[in-house]
Length: 151
Image (tube, rainbow, N blue to C red; front, side, top):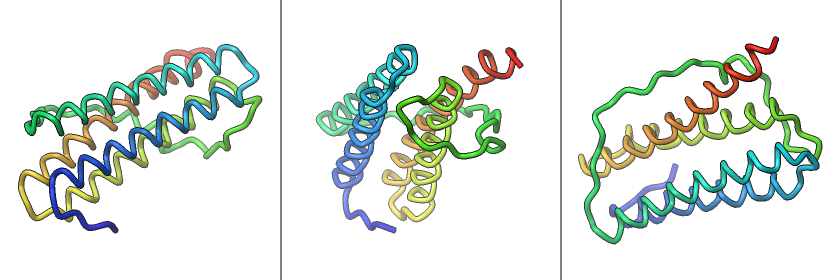
């Protein structure tokens, strides 16, 4: 796993990850034939753009707040099969893909936090992991409200 020597390197890495998520969702939107799915992927991309903007703000100001909160985990993503992006992706598959992507990002930042020796670096990674867990929860709630309640 990658080693970081400064907070700025971590922030640059996280900013790059958020941009990669923006690009990923925009690519899926461009490939989607369904107007509803295309709209959802654009919304996901906008959310990731906001996270990138927040990280840039932290980098510019040199300070960040680590929220002291717990995020519920509905664990819905744990029981769903992986889906591959496709042009004809259903809304259900789009939600599954988003949940799995956010879960992977959460795990990555959590693993980096475990390896961090500097308390401020650890706190930053934990804060990023918390943000990803919030994203995953929002997708799980949407999945529960729309997909599971319909079935």
